[in-house]
Length: 307
Ligand SMILES: Cc1cc2nc3c(=O)[nH]c(=O)nc-3n(C[C@H](O)[C@H](O)[C@H](O)COP(=O)(O)OP(=O)(O)OC[C@H]3O[C@@H](n4cnc5c(N)ncnc54)[C@H](O)[C@@H]3O)c2cc1C
Image 1 (cartoon, rainbow, N blue to C red):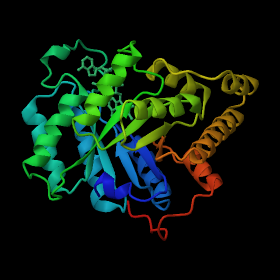
Image 2: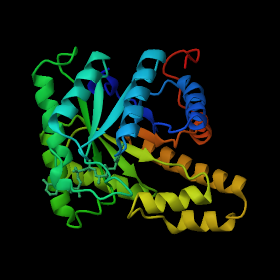
Image 3: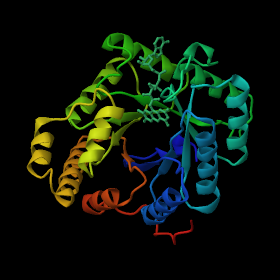
Image 4: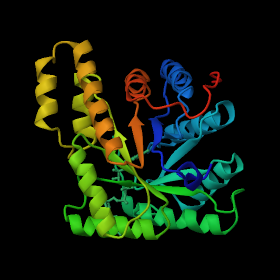
């Protein structure tokens, strides 16, 4: 379903992010998670895109599997990294054939463990990908006459590659003007960063929906990994204090992390957030607890799991 149809109405959207599993065991965990979360009928689920060839096929396969075997609406991520135009075009054709409604267009993280020359990529920034998808849409290559809905990333705390926050906002504005329909943010732990980002977007005349990215902390190791992967993330003292108090008790760490994310969600809903996107790390427990405690009505009758 096109994102403008998904987002119509006043209620906020709820969505989940998965990454493609690399081993049979990881695949089992993910499919169980999908079964667990399917009955919550999220507005969409998104699937991340890696930098390497084989993991990229896993993304395409997972997206198509979700599309054809579940009631969920998958949104694939697509990045500029190591891609030529014709490759992106074939992916768009493939997704259009399976009636995928939307794509999250990203710059992409560089591949790890090998040398990488960005100048060899056909698309240097996410905006170039947005423009390309837009041209594909205009060519009529998608069964929906509007083509793919296009999402882009936003960084409430700023993106590390552009320390000048005014210039960064210009880049985001250009990406939106090039044809983006919605923004999903990087995870954050202080809602003031998100709310201020939303205001700065409004001042820059960015008026598309901004979906807040939330990642519940469920372990000390996961917490340290977030700090490394989402470079620049600010961890409020309130969160750090709560985690420090129970750092040797894994069960309590998870409860503290989930409770913190729950409070963030309540506050975001009170502030009329357009949507909340949960970074699930392919596990359902934390997201289910948050969902159940937020008291969000199920959108439709719970469907029987089908994966
Ligand atoms: C919701 C979300 C999902 C993500 N999913 C994935 C994923 O699946 N796979 C993955 O590899 N990564 C993913 N990422 C990480 C993301 O790809 C990286 O953080 C990337 O560095 C930034 O992506 P972007 O789309 O904002 O890129 P861009 O919009 O290209 O911006 C990247 C940097 O370049 C600057 N910039 C933009 N345009 C210009 C210009 N014209 N001239 C000079 N500088 C410019 C921006 O200010 C920014 O600092 C995700 C991030 C988010 C927030």
